[in-house]
Length: 364
Image 1: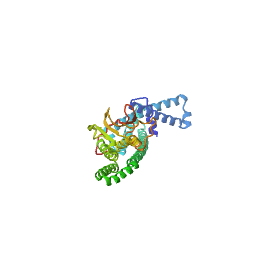
Image 2: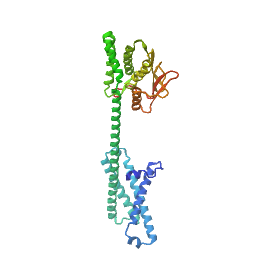
Image 3: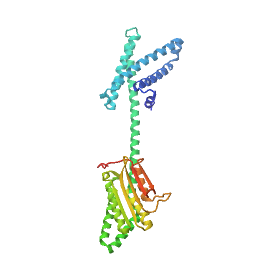
Image 4: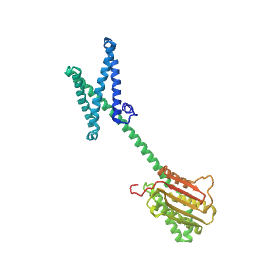
C-alpha cells in the first residue's frame, strides 16, 4: 500500500526519473521534519529561534543531498540489464549493498566538508551511515515484498475468476450442444419406423443421416467450434432427413464460398436456422417450401443467410430454443463481434454476420 501511494505521487510529471526523485525527496523531507520536531524540547528551547530554523534548513539541505545521491546511485545500478534479470532476493541484496556503499560515501563527504575540509568523528559518522542505510534498505525490501505478495494474490484471484468464467462458459456451451429438439427426434424415428415397412432404402438413408447428425452433436471433444465445411455437411444431413419426411415439398439451394470451408463458426449454428425455416415454412403451410443457404465473406468477416418462401416473420419475434441457442453460442464465442438479424424485405431471411474470421487450427 505504501509503495502504491509512493508511485502515485507527482503523476502529472511524465519523466519517470524526475517523478521518482521528487517523490522520494518529499517522503524523506516529511520524515526528517517530523524527527526534528520530535526531538527533546530542551534541545529545541536551548537554541534561539533563528538557530532552530537554521538547524532545520541545514538538516533539510543535508537530507536532500544524501537522498538524491543515494537514490540516483541505486537507480543507475538497478537499471543495469543483468541486475534487472536477477531474482527478487539477489536483486534486493544488490540494492541494499548499493544503498550502504552510496550512503557511507556521501556521509563521509558531508562530514569532510562540514568540518572545514577535514574528517572529524568519522567513525561515529560511518556507523550512523551504515545502520541508517541498512534500515533503509530493509524497509525498501519489505515494502517491495509486500507489494509483490499483493500483486501475486491479485493475479491468483484474477486467474481463479478467469478459470471460473471459462468453466461456466464451457458448461453453458455443453448444455447448448447436448440439447436436440425432441420433436424433431420423435418425428424422425416415427418416419424411419414407417419407412422400414414401405421403403427400406429410404429408411436406411434416413437412419444414416440421423446417426451422422447425432454423432456430430455428441462427439465434439470439448471443441466449441466447427469448420464451415463440417457445419454445411451436418446441415445437409438434417435436410436429407426432412426431404425424405416431406418428399417433394422441400427444395434446398446451397451457395457456399469454398474459400470459407476451413474457417470456424460455433458448432450447430446452421442446423437450428434451417430447422427454423422448415418449421415456419413447410410445417406451417404444408406447401412447397424453398430454402436457400448462402455463406460468403462480408468485409473482414463471414455472412450466413438462411432464407425461405414461408410466411413473414411477425413484427415481434419470439424466437424458439433453436434460434436462441444460436444467439447464445455467438454471444459466448464471439462477444461483441456478431449481428443476428431477421428480415422480411426484400426477402424473408435470417442473417448472421460474424465480424471476426478464425482459421481452423489443431489447438482450438
